[in-house]
Length: 87
Image (tube, rainbow, N blue to C red; front, side):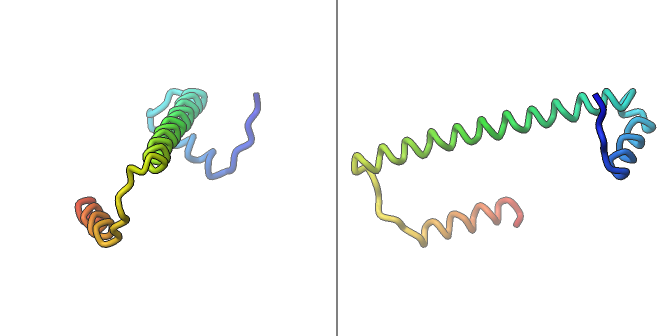
């Protein structure tokens, strides 16, 4: 398999191999692809969890298990989360 990569990416690979972080460009590529696969799997898992939560919310709404929307409380909660995350 041949890959064409930009000069910038070639430099990154060279630096990583020369630093001893990776024994070869193949090792670096193997780990990069594994990380990409892990990220994709995590994203899919999060998306499925979100879909399940949405389904629960829809079911609860259809059963009339809803509360009035309190935008002030939502804004306060968001502001608290942002402060706790240092933003």
